Structure formats: C-alpha cells, structure tokens
Amino acid sequence: MRLRSMISAVALAVLMTGCAAFPPVSPVEPGMTAQQVYIARGNPSFVYPDGKGGSILEWAAHEYAQYAYMAELDANGIVTWYGNVRSDTRFAKIKVNKSTKEDVLKTIGHPSDAEYLHLRKQEVWSYRYREDGVWNSMMHFYFDGNGIVQHVEKGMDDLDLRDGGGIFGWRY
Image 1: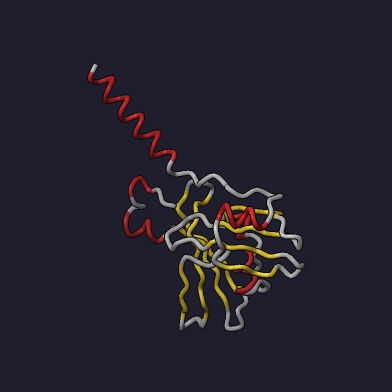
Image 2: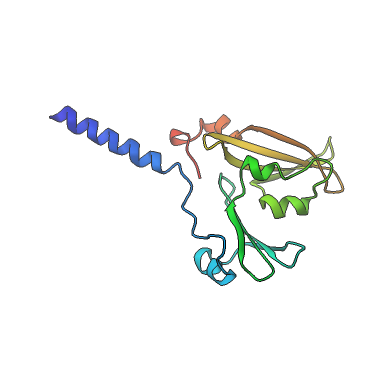
C-alpha cells in the first residue's frame, strides 16, 4: 500500500511540473478590438506604427523569459495576429544585410540581452527562447554601425552553461 501511495505522489508531481513547461494560454485572439486587447493584457510596454496605418503592440518579457508576446492591429484597431515572437518562424523574418534594428524590434521585440563587441564594432542583441518547444536556446543578431543585421547565430542558452538549466531545465 505504501509503494502505491509513493508511486501516485511521484506521478502527480511529474504531471504538475510537466504542465509548468508550457507557455500560458493566449488571452488575445485575432478579431478582437484594441480595447479588448488592453483589457486582456494590460498596457503594452511598446507600441510601434506598422507603416500601413496599424500598430504593433509589444509586452516586454523579463531577461530570462523564453516567451514574449506581440499583437499586430490593422488600421481599424482590430487584431490580425497575436502570438509568441520568440520562435524560429519569427526569427526567420529577420534578413541579413537588409533588416534594421527597427525591423527587429517590430518583428521580435526587445532583446533579453544587448552588448557591444568593440573589436568587431558590432552590437549584438540576444533572445532566449524554447527551440522546437524543447531546447533552451539563444538567437543572436549582430548589427553594424548603421544598425543593419550583418549576422545571425543560434546557440545554447548561456544560462544552461552556468547552472545546468535550473530545476528540471525549465524556465519561462
């Protein structure tokens, strides 16, 4: 009887921690009005014009977050897209020798970390994310002095190099 209770307790703990690895359910859906979005998510950290009369809303994530959310609204203030911008799909929209810092901000938001490489004379913006829903990864964008993306690099999240990924390797 004791063994059965112990197995049940372990199974319950595994199930509960497994659920913690998934991103939160979206409170915003396409077709919602700007007012509904503000009620559901609160005020965005940043608002960008999209160049077509609409706007892009960014809710900034903390530096250790692997998920960050943005919404795209048309000229009438209706949501056309909402979702996690820290993904390979969104990163692929950034083009080497073409995309600017402003393009990057409007596509994937503010970085987890930014630094300047003096010898290379490049600024690097780094984004933590959960690659393929499994791997703790970082995406790095290197900008020249004119703010144009010169290089893109993907690698392991440096936090995993320091602490083994935290408890069970899961972060948000």
